[in-house]
Length: 356
Image 1: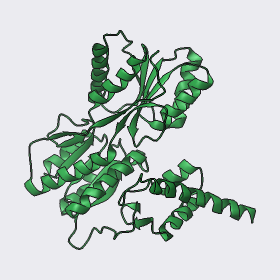
Image 2: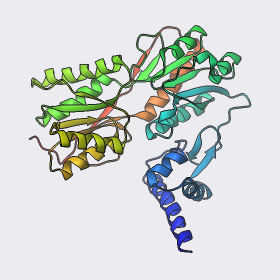
Image 3: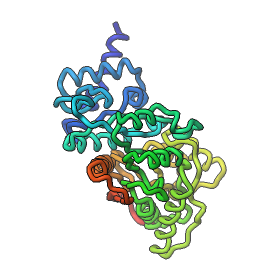
């Protein structure tokens, strides 16, 4: 009986968490919840417990299940992929399944897609694969006309995009100039601006040896990041160690702890860190605090909820909405020339921070 009571309390905890966010106005109708696997990891419970918590919200008509989307906030009619609805694919790396930033980008798609009468279907592929795109099921669906176009989120092999161009598939790429050399319309964050602002925050606090832990994507992205770093240095007129980009295998709290401990053990501790993942940045800050090391951490990401940090916040909802709108324009007009759309960023200054 005690076990049953504990399991129920955990389910209620999941439900209470989202009830509070809904009451606070942090979610709009049509936004997508993270996957059950992601929620199970976040709350450190089983998928069964998560599902029971979500069912409680469903009974209260706060969320609804939608095929191809998962659990969605609101109780309106679910979008359908059939009966005259045009269906496009939302292609993203399987490694990012359940990541909150992806879910919020997709929520932005949903919001705009309902206005346009377009249905998006989630499609996952490994980020790095030796399989030719022509041998993947998605290519056959595109050739048969089952998918009218594709929005590509994240870094995929260049051959995938070239195949789509060759077969005249309407495609939009979102992210941060991941395929800048290809004639593909893009909706992106400006990496130069993001890292200019993030590093400028560190320089404001007299940091001279910053570090930027990054999962390797493309040489082009790394060049843009260095461009932002150099621009910040020039604007501040301050010398700085330029060996800033630190290759890492993954993001997340565990990687943040591991990296911070490695720096502490080696004695090569940076005086500032730009963290492109909220969980990683918070974990590093905690490790530095325990070691009584003064290291300033600037967060970069979507839907940041951690107070007390300087941050560069990215608008994933607008990213998704703009990508959907651009794809619909491309479907209507068959626009051939590349277009570039930048999504604005928001700077969050820690009110308690002081210049050192």
